[in-house]
Length: 100
Image 1 (spheres, helix red, strand yellow):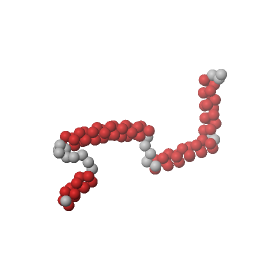
Image 2: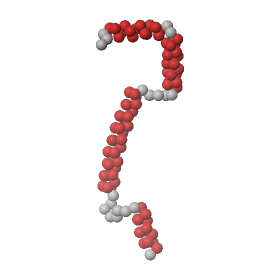
Image 3: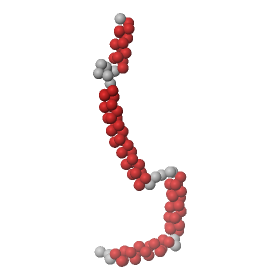
Image 4: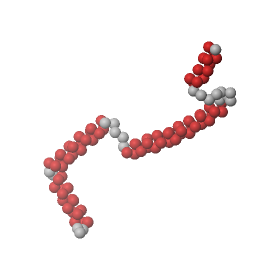
């Protein structure tokens, strides 16, 4: 197995060689080009994405809580004489009473 120092030395030598070669220039140019493209795309960081995802999660939970609360309030405010049914059912019965 190679010693860590040997691997570090090989890595630094390769970097020295590439620093003066056209490959390093190409890498820099591609990197600059990609950064320009990414900046125009209005991308968000992973951190920003995760924060927004957490906000949406909390919002969904709150929405469910509020929907349940509204449902309970509607049941409390509904008069006890109202017959359960759809709007069409209620309209049909009122039409029959008016026509009959």
